[in-house]
Image (tube, rainbow, N blue to C red; front, side):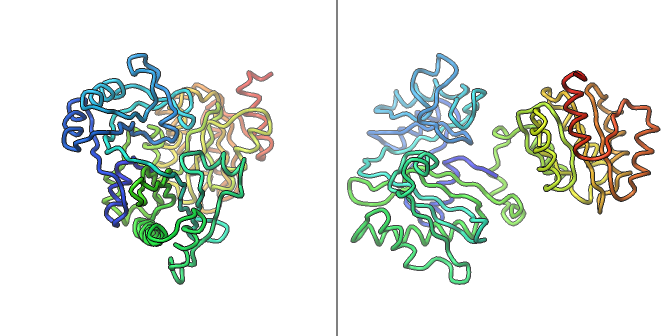
Length: 399
């Protein structure tokens, strides 16, 4: 689960980390009040969307002005005018794609006198099963670009969970960033508190870009991006309250209600599969035969008929779907349950596109019989390769 910058900074502040003063607002009048409360003389007006590249982004609407999604204001009137231009308009960045995201809230923040910009992030390193730090002197830039152009400018190290973060970790960061004296001590304190926040809140990613040194010689988290481990959210109702549903795909929201693992993609072939590995193989083979999957959807091993019905409805709700592939290898998941779920969903929403069904495993004959005797225009498949070729051929009009 992702949250907005201002929410991330509020969490960092809880753990004693240095962040600028700021206020989230939802209207131009609130922007004016926030600017007066902060006092100026310099304010930063930041669009709050779940995407990076806001500063270099562009608004679709001419009324939003020529500048990007992060703007420097030198007066209260300018803060209010920027808020009027940005709120309700669509911001396009390198991460949103051309569709962009509508800006529904802004963050008005004190301006900062910046001496130097750095990059610092934390994530879960799957290779070591540890929390890893990624540090670079190239702050304010896309870390992917830095890794491609100048990989020697990136330091990565992991923390042993048996010991937790230690003083030498902070010294590593300070050395990598060229910080000495009081700033080196601040770096140690920063690393300790970031690690504490990451563990306590079950984060999966924490990015500070940029981490700055102010002209008066102190470290400050100028931006913050945080993601949480969705599997741990039951432990954090206070984090769940931060969820912004307007930033999420409606189909993914609906899927979460039924505990379905669903991710919307850009293709035309809807997929309903059980098991993440088989789902990934299904997406791969669709691409192998020249088409694109419309989603990743794992109904899980213990799916009920209701859950399967919900999954099918979510797939058919996508207007880009031109065909559907149901690929089930039944172990715990029984083929007859899948078959009844598909039938129930088809009766509820109708079937307007080709449907290929491949069933194998527990109760497979019962499942095939249910499908065969349903009277539906379903294309049966014997194995994954056969299923992929048939659904690709069907969406191409049988050519």
